Figure 1: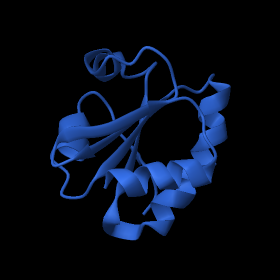
Figure 2: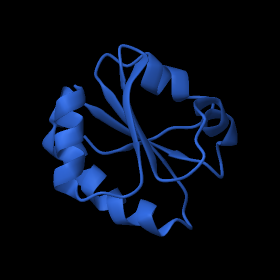
Figure 3: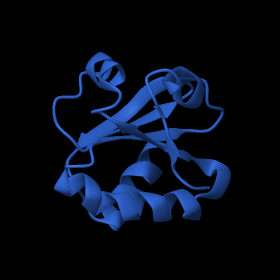
Length: 106
């Protein structure tokens, strides 16, 4: 399953109402560290199959969701399970660290 682009309008439907845990990546096109973790998140999305969803929120195009979540720096990653935040982290990390974080949280 590829990553899903989520907007202010689709956030609740795609993330909060998802029947699988969702990793939300708040990012921007101009953000170097965001571009670093992008391929790792794509790979993890494929590797986990239908067990998780990876959603990407472009903070420049969707400022309301980022503001509501209190995102102050990017990349900012959140894991939602049953509509609630169960974990979050900021900054770039290698794929192995992201995978460990996801495994611990879901």
